[in-house]
Amino acid sequence: MKKKIIGSCILVMGILFSGSIVYNETTESLRNITREEQLEMFDEVRSQLESEVNYIEHITEIKPNGYVTDTYVDKSNYLEQMDQYNNNELVNRMIFYEKGSKVLSIGKDESEFEGQMTTLDQSIANENKKNFEEYSQFKTEIENALKQGESTFFREEKTSDSSVIKYISKNLNLYFDKESKFLVKKEEIVGKEITKTIEFERIERTSSLGNSLFKQESPIKYNEDVNLSNIRIENIIQKLEVPLENVRV
Image 1: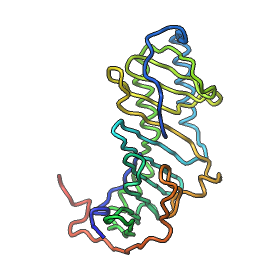
Image 2: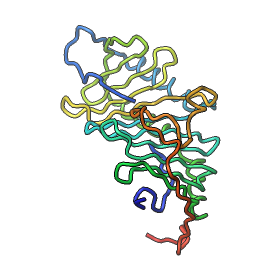
Image 3: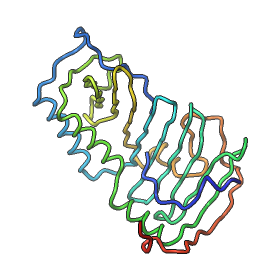
Image 4: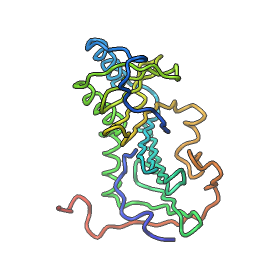
């Protein structure tokens, strides 16, 4: 199997599908949002981020070229799964286990999927564990979206999806769950094109989806016909000649 699918790994703190309409200049379906109303919505999102909730962090980044990074993180149990797609085809899957000390990497060697289970050098494993404890891309991306939105004038646009509240502006669209008021999607816009979409989901650990994650055969979002349960897995032990903590850039 080609070695390019594993390499020396530092924990990737990653990273659903969008067909949303960009900023609408018309006013027929638009409502101006007061500054007070906007900040109240943002404060509600932040308060939910700060609360201790038993959920898996799910963040998906979609680019207009068809490249998607779909990431699930269970910080309490030190687990991460990152699936990458190109035009709805699975490119690779990485799953971190045992507090970041092991990583399963799955990719295609020609037409067949194969995998490597690598026991990482202890210095890298320690760094991965630290990243689990100290960093959350899920929370960072949401906070960045809110900070970007604080200096933006939004209007609310009616949509066919009654479950969301959509804030639109020239360069940024934000979507909030109508019931919980949590941020569920961010769209960045340049001109009239959506250049990046990030979607956010909180998954209950005990849910059907929560129980199916962080496994070699976990459900594949866009390639349901792909079966990874019986692919060949090669076991590797990684040793660095120079410990990570001694590396100087």
